[in-house]
Length: 387
Ligand SMILES: Cc1cc2nc3c(=O)[nH]c(=O)nc-3n(C[C@H](O)[C@H](O)[C@H](O)COP(=O)(O)OP(=O)(O)OC[C@H]3O[C@@H](n4cnc5c(N)ncnc54)[C@H](O)[C@@H]3O)c2cc1C
Image 1: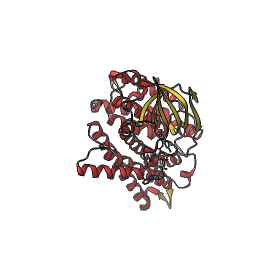
Image 2: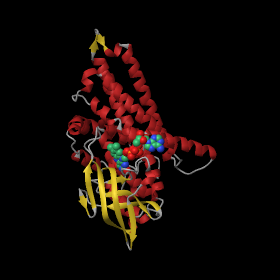
Image 3: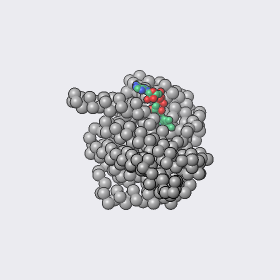
Image 4: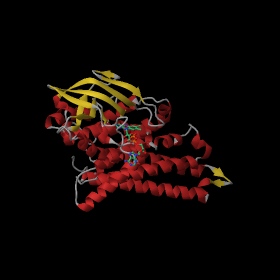
């Protein structure tokens, strides 16, 4: 865990990202999104700014900044284009798994490559029959001398094709284990094939793929921690994933709200700006209130995790509330815009298509409620274990 960042440094980093997003992202985001174009040059600039190593300790080449800085950066990226926050999310989760559960040797080998963005990371937990049901992972890892043989099909691997390191959940004889699989970016590497690029409603520009492992060999030391304990390592890192989803929901919601309040002041009906109609004012008030509550819950979850306290309940609450808020605010922003909100000429329709992902990713909101309730009950009974 990196130390808390000086508040002035935190503000400066977030402000820099805000300026970068205004200059480089907002002018091109909708066009690239409509074309499903990977934002190569934007990602290169993110690399140069160190955004792939925000939370990675400085001793391993990262910026060593705290989670509050991270959520500020994620909010700004998502404000411009939600997909950019997805580029750093599973990358950061992979880095957290290595930093928290890997050996000294694994940290020294992989964290500097992730920090510089030289290798991009991804998380490969889900399968077609193991989404909410994480314990149903069927991809197999079998020990064969100095190697593990991996066989199976993984689904929904965001960043999977461009990644150079995969944090993989696979079933070994001891249970679900976590491995770091090195690969070259591209559709084929050793026994790994990117078999499908999944078409999506939104979250375009970055790939979410199906990956097949056919007797793919990895060295024995690719195993993270102890065999059979991989799901625990991944779920712990997913707390940060959920905080990321909450922060990106805040970013999308803020963009939708800003668009709505600006438009409400420009658009006139019945001889006055629609912002003067009470029905619109009520919408704007509700949107702003939800946005503020979402931001505060997200900040609270990040503060707890940053302080080293258990944050499963808080991360779940932030993800649940912020994603529902973003979904509602994006819908209301579209309604405030009337017909033009439905057109592809304004980014409001993009917010409306991007927002639902956050209800689903990193555990659906139905599952978040289970996580929250179980966590609350465990705290009451003094028990400690995660779900
Ligand atoms: C665009 C996108 C990107 C993704 N990226 C990644 C990634 O990078 N890495 C990765 O590992 N995964 C990724 N995922 C997978 C994501 O985490 C899963 O889709 C999600 O956890 C839901 O699993 P599922 O799709 O199998 O739905 P299911 O588990 O089949 O759920 C279907 C419905 O049933 C509900 N449900 C299921 N079980 C329960 C229960 N016990 N109680 C109440 N309701 C329940 C769900 O809430 C949902 O409404 C991604 C998904 C998407 C859509």
